[in-house]
Image (tube, rainbow, N blue to C red):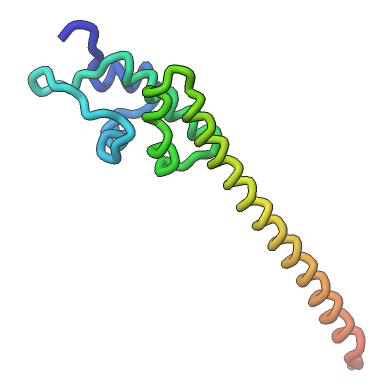
Length: 128
């Protein structure tokens, strides 16, 4: 089949497990492999795709989010469309994180108030 890689070779080049490759195929992140008899055969495009998936994971995207942008990287040679979509996802993550931080700060403040109230109660109770 020419310049193709078997699943083990692909896994090694992309620094993932063969199980990961099969999983990515099952959820549509990676195109199903062609077969050479009973062997799965991949092209260099699969290596690039796996590297891009890893890069997007490193940015904090979930696999579901990656699924919404991965094809854009390979359809648009500039990557601009994909990058705009990734930027929107990251901005959403930031807004969500800032909301969580705000809620945690409020929770911390409430805890401090409750601790002071309990300490005051304990101090006011006569000691035997």
